[in-house]
Image 1 (cartoon, rainbow over the protein chains, first blue to last red):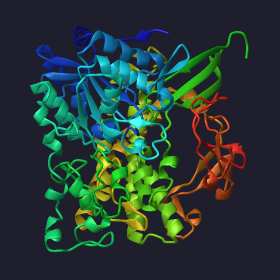
Image 2: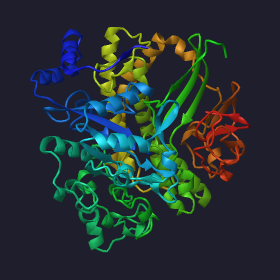
Image 3: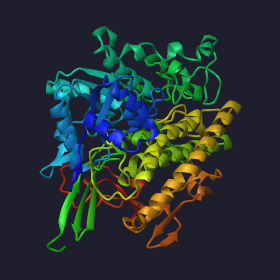
Image 4: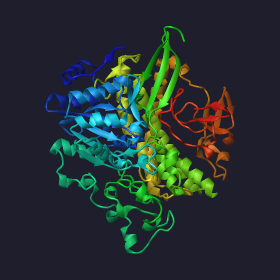
Length: 313
Length: 318
């Protein structure tokens, strides 16, 4: 079977000029012609995940997902999404070969995004992607190979950052976050955590843009959990819209009642994230405005340390 | 299986939610046998054991980032049922709005971003390449239109997420659903902004999405008759129109039902079973979900296939 493989920027320009170009390629073409665009290959590996972080990141508004995939994530900087299990056209070995070839060709120069925890029990037997001579390649093996050669690893979501939901007790598949796995495997590639269940599109795009424009963050720009303080330094509680209720001693005791949600288990005091000012889904809402307590989904202890979810800690 | 038969393996099967492998046997350009295997085990059943029941809604919906709503609603209904309560009308209707909104999101995502690249080629940049040079029949003019619609679908599906989020707090993964109903109180601003988003979505569905589906169905006409699987279907239905204490007796906009051997039947929940005959578990097969066991054994020699599968009256169902 013949395969349409890769295309260089020069080839792309030739194609774009020759082919009937639809309107949304024109700005890309104009920018490409300036020949100032820097390209960054991305390998987006989904491990023990629900794909919710991918689904969340494609909700990005400025830049739009069209900007991110077809144009530039920020003017002059283009991400080349070489491998993404949910979005890429290729399947089977054609897809996994692309991941492998990108890692080899751009050794030390590609961005590895990990979405999902890493199953480590029984030598990684609980999760595999693709096969080698008929034998499954564990997600653990992929992490070892792709992690070692990456310029930087971005964990998107709490599962990839700290283990998250699949690592909840009794952690049936021995799931771990990427940093913990790297430590065991002596991988020294820098890791930046972008947690959340799911992660917010702005947190992901913001972290990527920061690296592309200013390089790797200084150690003092990250907190003790490997997150950018920019997004994760202040607690949900301290910027909560219900603070006036707490100050006035008005506490909700049942769902739907007016008041601070602490007695209903709100984890806002233990959760660092900028949800109260950033809001979700085009800023239409966030958990607490919907009358629901914060469940602490950006934290290392999620979900076990926050369980029972609806009881005051 | 004849001498010319050839086995192929597609692993990973991309553009789905989850991790899947397909093994197919092909003879004279025809698939004569196919097996599927889920290649990730997380163990939600095990994680739920011993936990506070109220936590279940938040945990189980995280099974899937594309369709958390039905998982959350099913979990809340199971708890409603266990506690012997029914949600008030506001709770029932707001759950319905969230489910409806996410169904729209999920359908648009499925058709354009997961399925459509099997039918048209898209532009010559990743993630559209590499690709197999396969059976793409759409003419050039339509190719351009579909690429535009693929991009437009990205922008419009997030409006469906917004429509859900207005009621759920955020999406994916909804904060507001709890046993007994929802935590949010309807207000006129929420209702107004929802109606406008719904109108925008309806315009896209009527004028772009449905015409695209019909156009591709006409171009790939014979695809309507291939890949029907086992032909047995089981649906619990959704969008409750009343609050009957027995969820299986509720009137639903999309009703509950099952199709077996071409016949439409009523679902008998007592006859539903977990089929793990071909899966990597050490438990007994065809147990009722209420007595279901989950003892994974990833190294077990597999007979044919993957994860737990639903069955009823001894038949495998989809």
